[in-house]
Image (cartoon, helix red, strand yellow):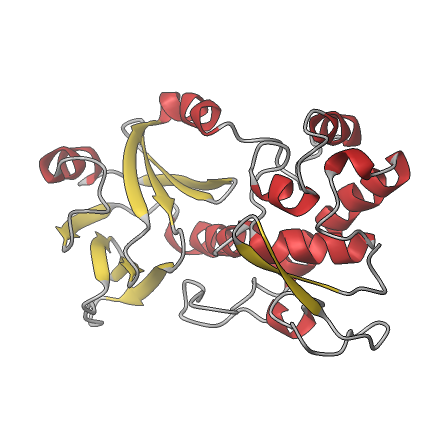
Length: 274
């Protein structure tokens, strides 16, 4: 958390807010998340124009003139805010970028697991290969045949942890892997090899459906996530199983069960999912 819908929401908001602006000031308030020397970071970004904002899996990409990209990974509790110049940083603010036009970008992370990397834009594809990212689920190039072939390579793995590995599909975490399994009517504890072609197809389509709906509602604020305006997402209102252990299934009324799977709590409906 944040996962694909949350990072995509932030990306889209930043596209509207900061493209074309220049970075006119840099304040590194906590050095550990910065995977570069402070002087190197300053030289690369100070005075640069923000030419585009992208996303790959759960990574947020801020592409600059001068052929550098700032890569943000929000991990568990990272946040990116766009604020007016008169707003002061908090004790959890690790990086402040002063932008032309009278605004600032804050990177905050109270759990301190997130990171900021400075990478040559030309080297981004190599970074993605090193991370072994699978297909982008909302990209037209993400085809069912590729998804199915990836699942069949790991027949003994449980389906939900496999979805979270990023190798078959990029950007899913605990929330959307659980929700996708529910929408597909598949128990998350089943092995990938037990799924029929029809079930794999349902899962493929369910992933797309869940992610599109979550983006529509600006992500899930089940924990610390806020968008760039400091507002909560709204998709938590529509969650079917995640975070609902012991509650009634919205579809059939059965009690949502919880198991430990891959070191994570996993919720499912014992009637709707088989």
